[in-house]
Length: 170
Image 1 (cartoon, rainbow, N blue to C red):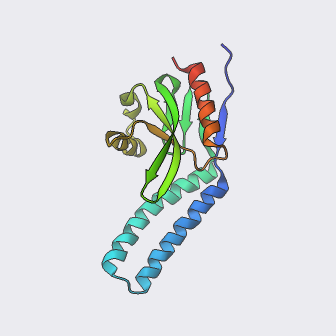
Image 2: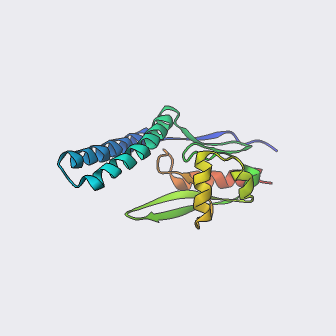
Image 3: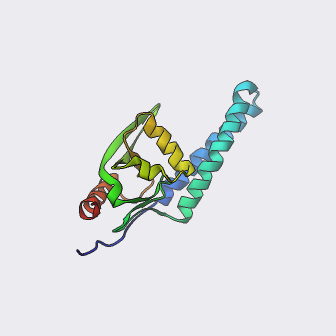
């Protein structure tokens, strides 16, 4: 069997910087609200929550900007850094599809991977995997690859993943 080459899907750094700018603007807005005397009972908890989420989010964006290889496919499986999934062997991937997510005021598309054995994936109890496991227990049907920050379209990524699943899944 001839092996397919390793394929790397890289981050679109302008999208990462755009997200960073919006995050900084959101923090500046909360600080402005605090400074203008808006009800402190609302603003102070919002600032604390923003600081916690921003620290994690900014760190992840920085890491993805520094190492722009977000999704790597090779004959062994998928290595994902877009959502922090880590390595998933082809033998544990049943199917892949594009899934549209509607949350509050935003809609976005992800590639959803259906796994043959969720327990095998969740044995690695990283923080990200625990969050994903909680999402699956709340009704999501699979794990997601984040494609909004890639240079490639989600259709191109999906087509390539399906080719690899066909070739290497056992």
